[in-house]
Length: 408
Ligand SMILES: [Zn+2]
Picture 1 (cartoon, rainbow, N blue to C red):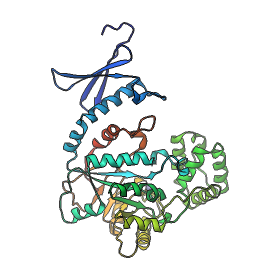
Picture 2 (picture 1 turned 90 degrees about the vertical axis):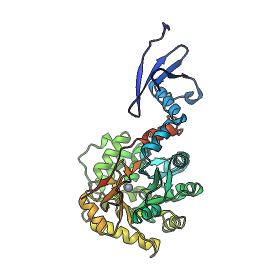
Picture 3 (picture 1 turned 135 degrees about the vertical axis):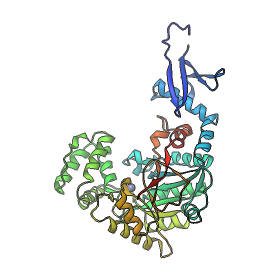
Picture 4 (picture 1 turned 30 degrees about the horizontal axis):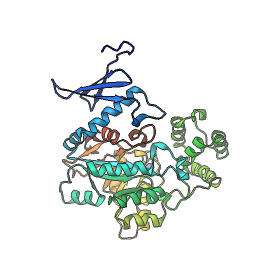
């Protein structure tokens, strides 16, 4: 290369499995990237480290920066879109969201970031879906299913889990504005509940209060809940999630009591959907499905049959007698053959998992089909400054494995 002061390193980046890109550092913080689009013609461009895209701290590693720029370029050139339109023509993509909160909302502070998206990123995602997919409603999916008709090419269904008030407060207005429908799965027991799930209350306590761990230890002792895991590991996000997972095996009524006592000390606005908000969703042509009753995994709960039947009853009662609640998503994504059979026998026709799979639409009328869904994490599609990059979402979403989930 002839630049004595610069170590010449060559990085190979594999993109969508086959494209090899060479990165060559050059003078003055510029990099020459070449990727062989054909044997005799290499496409090259220069990228300056101080370009506006990455101009302020925190600065991502050089490798990440270069990788991001390459992805952006291929996306901007339309390469990813062509790949997607060809590959996913006959796949139904079902995306899964949980919470949508603007950063300014007080409830965003203690919400688990893995399951929470800002309103700006959510809006950007919806625009991305409109550009690359044919978004459909649950009603359209059911009609195509019953009539044995094909879905439009690259169909996409938007779903929400749990029944958070923010689905109605923040996500719904953006969906309505962009003319999109969603399917909202609601846990029967949380309707009109002001406090969040006990899991979220504990996450809030441990992530945002310096004395959270000591407080939790006291509360666990008071309510006679003990776990084998060392609570001290709850220092970072992963540690907190591990402790919460462990607590999931303990008595849920005691955990709910702990969550309730925490809520008394906080003045957060209501966290879960009200009857009115639930009704408004269906008036605005969104669909409502079940997410179990207590939000416990159906694979471990004592009476799964009662869980799913009660949830169906309560949701039907809340929505009015004309409503038909025949869709369900498994709490925590947990299911097995027995759980699926119980759900079908209880009158649910469409069962959604959290298995990260695109649904192949050939042979789509199989009775024992479970639908795969793709979780979209805000951190996987935004840069370190929180800016959304469509190329990051495209890389994640377009290349998910595809198939047909069946139980026997
Ligand atoms: Zn859930």
